[in-house]
Image 1: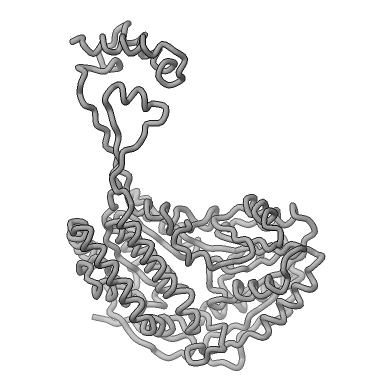
Image 2 (image 1 turned 45 degrees about the vertical axis):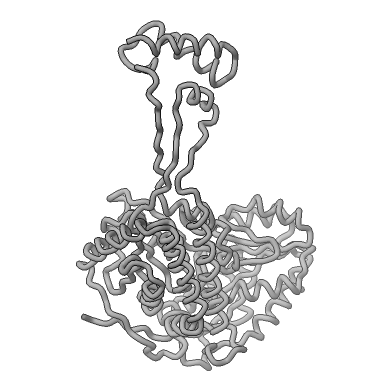
Length: 516
């Protein structure tokens, strides 16, 4: 069996290796997942809850080991391994357990305007939320534990098995997730991680029951096309180009602090990191001065043993070189790089300096291009309407933020921004709030993870309608006749619009029930 190596981009040293899976093995692996899924849903709920409890304990107890594995795959600072990944996994595990415990997997539903009619006819409807079966989680490299783990634990809590395809840059984390679930006592094969070339297309064209993909928009479109051949439902969490709006009444020092973190956390390799900052002209100069000062003070390097390091590396050499190319585009389109804009000459890993850009025309092509790295453009604006227009003038719509001391104003602006999530006076971190929905619009994807909405999207709403069978026939059954036709014409007004005639309709209905 061949091996796949993981290279730490902060040190350029091989940090580990995993066994690769041949694409021809995918059907057999999925079949094993199906068998494990059957065992899982047959387990009493108390046993499944016990597995969730052990899973939580393992994450907490092995937090340092998990963080070390994240760093080995990505090179990100130790602090970020814990704050953006492990805390997120802990929170989602707790939340998913609560859903498994309290969610009504079977419930009677009301019939709305048809309730009186259905009650009169002795009919009821139920929804059974049934797991899809095997869910494929195809994940990105930027949060190799947080993203696939949160989607996996929600899918498992809903009763599914999961096959994980981690990024080829972060294979160690995929194997670690599988081992954690196995150690917690989940059926062997319920969560399976696979790594190797050609597996993405092998999975999307397989007989999995649902696909949750996180990654670039172009790849997401290809995933959707492949899934469409078998009408496999998909959740796509794709690119972002998030805007930050700073109003003239904002706490400017706090906004500058928040922008520094939201722009350069994980070296800007975050789908919801701030990439466009729009600042009202009255405070533009002061904000820009504070922002540049704070960004210039960030220490870059291998942040595993040095707690003062804030900015880690790009994931690989290809992404590092892409940042240089983007900076060339920015300058060619009229932008001015006031800070950074180059590969860090003092470090051996894939480090690109935090970069701040000004004077770029708001309609420059690069403004609508996903950067996915430590490059941020700052623009002035004059009016609230202009800020909203500029923020919305982008094909991506994943998240964004508004910064103002007037919270009502912040809510008003937030409601007008086209996006999946808008924060007022904060940014980025809400992926770590498990009870809030996560997903984008436009070129940022479709579907939802997290929250009750995301949990339901891991299940199929199976409708069961029960008729007590007290009548021989319904008035709309064949053979048609004049009396039934007249009754049907009167039912809408009587039962649904409440325009009178209910007693008359009911009497006529009972008479038709007695006819052979």
